[in-house]
Length: 252
Image 1 (tube, rainbow, N blue to C red):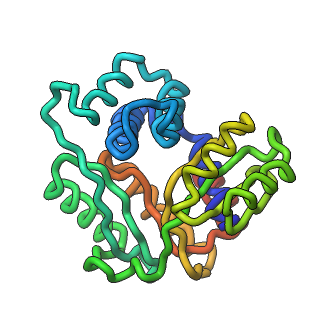
Image 2 (spheres, rainbow, N blue to C red):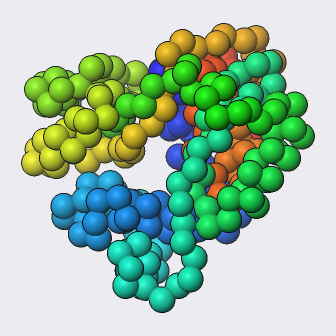
C-alpha cells in the first residue's frame, strides 16, 4: 500500500494540471452527485458528501455549481443527465489487474473509451469478475503525516474498528472494513481530524512486482485511463517501488 499511497500523494499535488485540462470540475461534480445520492444532500450528516464539497471548494468551484450538483442528486435539479457508478475490469500491460471506477450518464460511450484506451496502452478489457476476485473493498482514510499525531489517529482508528494503520514519510493511512466507514468518519470528525482523502476503495489482495521500466509502462497506462472524463479512479495490483516513483517524476 505504501507505494500506492506515495503515488496518490504525488498525483494530488499535480491537481492543478487536471484543472488546466478542464476535467476537475466535471469529476468533482460527479463525485458530489454520487455522494449525495448515496447518503443524502446534507454535508453535516453525509461524510462522503462533505469531503467531496470540501474538495470542490479547494479547487475554487463556485457555490452555485456545488448546490446544483447536490440538487441534481436529490431530485430537485432540472438537469436531464442521470449519472450512475460503474466498474470495469481488465488488464494493463504486463498482466497487471485493473478495476476502473467510472461515473457516467452514457455507459456505451464510457466502455468504448475505456476499451480503446486499454487497447492502445497494451492492455485489454476483461469480463465481469475476471479480476475483482483479486481485490477487496475497504474504507480508506489518508492524513498528512506532518500535520497529525500518529498515536491519536491510531487510537481512534483501532477503537473504531480499523484493520490497519500505517505511516510513511508523507501520509498516515487507515484501512478498515466497509461497515466501519461511518463510525470512523464520525470519530475523526469529533476529534477535528480532517483526512485529505476518505472513501471506499478497492485494495489488491496481493501486489505484482515488475521492473522499473515495466512499472512505468503500467503507470502511464493508468494515467491515460484517469485522463478520461468518465473515469473517477483506477485500482491496480501493481507494486510501486520508490525507484519507479522517482523515475516517473523525472520523466514528467
